[in-house]
Image 1: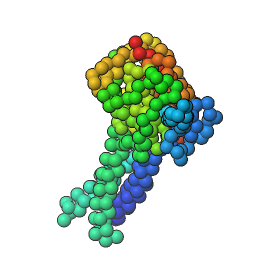
Image 2 (image 1 turned 90 degrees about the vertical axis):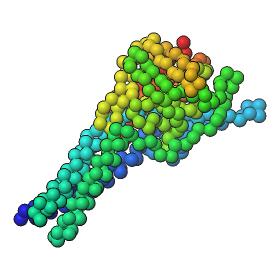
Image 3 (image 1 turned 30 degrees about the vertical axis):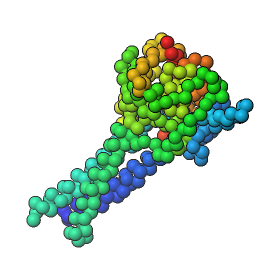
Image 4 (image 1 turned 135 degrees about the vertical axis):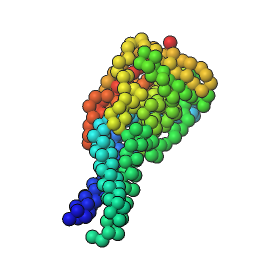
Length: 109
Length: 204
């Protein structure tokens, strides 16, 4: 009975861990900014297919020049605090459960 | 379930738990750099080809400080991220300078950005940028040891999808400095704040 409980805990912990890992890796991608530059109609934020927001190339008296205007940066991550904290708690729980099981196995031998 | 399987599951839980814990902690506190950052080609502005200086590594900024806010940060030179945004510093304590624009002390816009907070909501380098006063000084030191002093003209908050990027990146009437950071409320679905705080300053 006791062993069954520990096994069940380990399975639950592993399931938590796998879902947490997928969440953690999902955070590596962000979709921010817009595809348009100044004066454009607001659009839903999407991952831009092009590396720059707008590039203007002009030719004057035989001279070519290119102006690059990037979109504004995304400079904050505080909104992910809850998710990060839950991930830390879940992973720490997994470690604790696994360590507890191994310690008990060693003690009972 | 056999003891071997239980034992394996326990070890798996410990190893995977350690990995997820450390990755989450590092990304939340240190912040992973953007992938696929494109370097900006050297270019000459068509708007002020006679006055705009092409930046050389010696003119690149290495230090930015705002004495009134207690900000003193190292500067990273950045380009454009994979989504077309100006790239950001690789941690929450440094400041990024857009190397495709003007270097400090020259006609044009020297554009900087920095994080408002980290993955735990703790203060980033520009957490208190909104408290900056008109006329406050911003000091920028370049690699060759020159320090430029800018005075704040105004601050503006724009919706994140309606920022006047041409004004920010291509003001050529004087030597300007622009600082951008996030502001407002977090939008969960887009993983960004809904506003951008922009500070405009002019060389003194």
